[in-house]
Length: 403
Image (cartoon, rainbow, N blue to C red; front, side, top):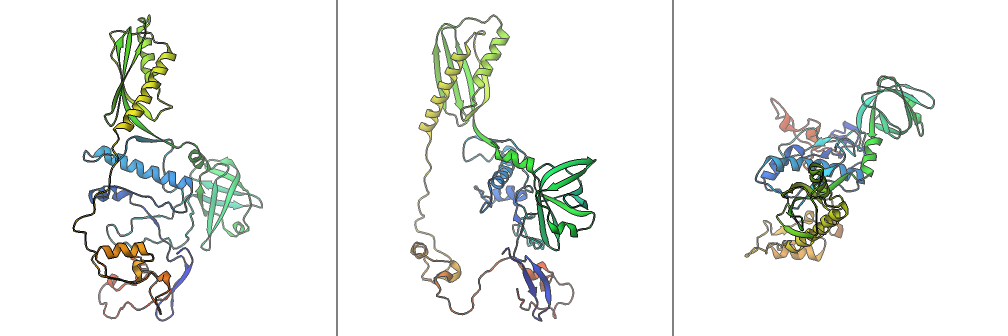
């Protein structure tokens, strides 16, 4: 589907020449998340096959933030698991592998769902090439450039890319770029040729480090008095533990500083999976508690909360199979159902299918058979569908086309 094709009509006339006609834009359901949730969807999966770590981090973070915003706005939803994710970068779906966006047919058929020019990631427009020299090029840009950026231009439907070894600012919004290797085709372009960036080096560097953190909220309360401190931790799920520390704790000379130290010390949960949502100090007065004792007290309480949460966790179970079992809507499956092994065959038999043809890979189909059926319609994409015609359409028929 990423190869170039030529499309011809039934008379052999070329409709489209050497374009990537089966290459689709990327699935983007950002605008439809609320409606999908209303329709009953409770689990979302990104397109991550053959993608690198940066892509997975970026797209996951994007949808995580979108879903978090929906959960915050609505009172009828809750997270399926505990914790909240904090990201240390700003997700941008257009900065990792991206061929444009479409939601396909979720709402209606759309005419522009293909990425026909190139199946590659050309990135975002960042400016234009002003001049090409022997070992460098001068560019005018709308965004700052950095050493290591990946840049490219389109020349006769081909992406010509290069890595910026060194960039030097030469004026307002202008840079001189020395590529690692100077592509020969760059000398073919004219001034003001569009320039794209498909690798933002500084942004990518942020993704190579710890880019997100998931922590569980905990409310902390410190009570007691001079001979015994009582520490209560309550997780966001409502699991609570109480830990005590016996000793002789004197009243502090500087009450304000002592209270601040107690609050800050109890909130330091950095090496745990928790973060302090609320810290309450319910003491009759301010006490001086050595940092070493307070830290040990807090760590022991966090360990106790770990054990209590694990003990209270109830593992979910599968719903039992309906009785009577549901009946599959068809009693005969063709090779298009792709039933290739015995387990799949048993599954369909169990739900009422009587006749099952082998999958195409079993080599039992004779003659010509369809190898792909898709809602993506090239006739529609090139405005050749009779349904799109206005006025008299009797003479306009959907004749076969050749790919």
